[in-house]
Image (cartoon, rainbow, N blue to C red; front, top):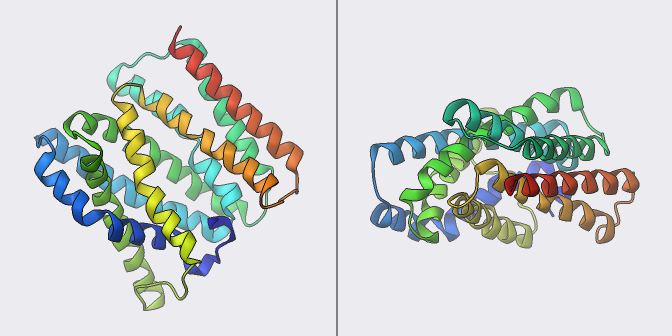
Amino acid sequence: MARHARRECDPLWWALAAHSLLFAPWALYALLTQAHWTAQLVLMLAISAGTNTLYFIALRRAYHFAPVALVYPLARSSPLLIAVWAWLLFGVETPWVGWLGLAVGSAGLVWLAFSGRVGDTRHALPWAVLAALMTSIYSLSDKAAAPNLPGFVALMGFLSVGYLCAMLALALMRRCSEGRWMPTCRPHPLIVLGGGLAIGSAYALVIGAMRELPAAQVVALTNLGIVVAALLSIVVFRERSAWVIRLSAAVVVTLGIVLLQWGGHV
């Protein structure tokens, strides 16, 4: 739905604001009272909040130059980076089939992104790559924090800190450039509500899954959502431009996820 919102309405900001209004008050209380507070958790919270803020800044900047269809798959092509950081920093081994799955999935995401190549790709690309880099960092910090966050609501509180920081940073940037704190318009209320309900709760489930699985594997699994979004754009929104290429790229992404899951059991 965000693909059809006007860019000047800044749907990212509205989604963050809706999340903060709906969840932050009680989720932050749960974080304060239920989390097992340690120096490591405080450090991971600071890293996660900082990189989440940079992620949303980079993502919005990329959207300034190119549409969601090109930017978002590139921003989500981070599982390969996550596996590299986990190997270099923590010695986490990935079987060769898993590496192959990560590479195939990343290639599929890049193919999917460039299947509808429109807009100023040259200027959008560095920001999309920065968003992917930030995703790889906060994914590892969130995995390290997860054991100290019992329950779903505490996880939501952990995320709410980063989302509040990102919302304030985006508002401050707008204030400096446009002289106003809020966007000039608002997307359709259903877009705002849907974004607010999903943007945090979905990722809290991801962090919960990281308790049981490697971060790269979990983030790669979430990219099935991009496959579903590609199918919805073709079937529901009837965006038939280059649909054969987009469908083929979605199949490649799915193949990469299958290989990664197989590699996890080798």
